[in-house]
Length: 303
Image 1 (cartoon, helix red, strand yellow):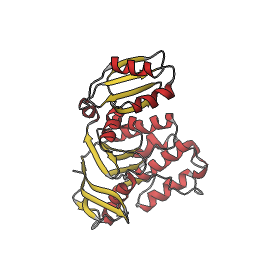
Image 2: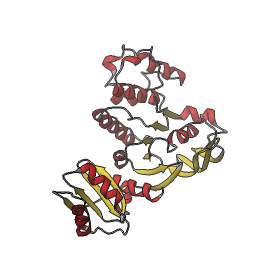
Image 3: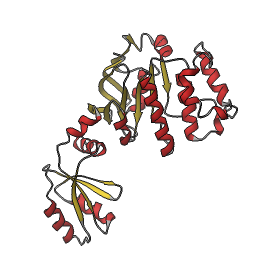
Image 4: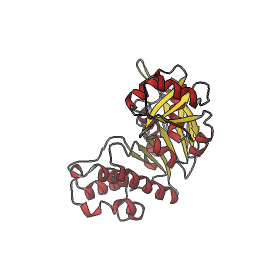
């Protein structure tokens, strides 16, 4: 086992940031922590990276306690924090060389590990890091986190704030790293990225709501799901949320996904209810859930 987190608790005065968090990460997998801002992801990552002490519980990495063996832990992890933390006044090449030197290696020695990623920004190696685009900054930060051949890669919201193309490229890079045997723990607020992980944990308000393979989370969805639209989408969302039988109502693109409290899907009842509310051109049909629907329902259930 690469990482074991047991009953982890962390408080900031009156704020309970982590509430008895427990999970493990196996060698060679991409493990995703999915949650919105304030869920506790960054606090958890900082404890795992030995940058923050827990109030209770234990974290072990390769059978080493991260508190007692923090020096050894920092040698074997690659940590990419949520905010870009490289040196803006150094060039791309200088940043990478600096981090290689810190870990007693060189760019040349480990170039094969970062080649697929670094090659995207190598043409700009003389450009200062502060002048890079968001996607290029993320690639540089990932290269710096990998240059010493870590045994575990910690990525705290690596795709936040970058464009859709850069997000896709970044996840392709993570898949390539996994294929080379790298173990990756990644956090993200984007639920669609959950399906790209081997296993995911949904974290909300400092607690893990579910931990499963993405495909099993969908299989375990036990509510009938309806997709609904009308000529007044704003009013539709409001009216459906005011429906006393509604369990969850969320907008997905041009449709509203609707779950009922009794786990059924009374299409005729909803059609009549919306007609009485003045909606026209109503379209209601059954759909299979996607992972975002499953997460939304779990969060509703645990409010």
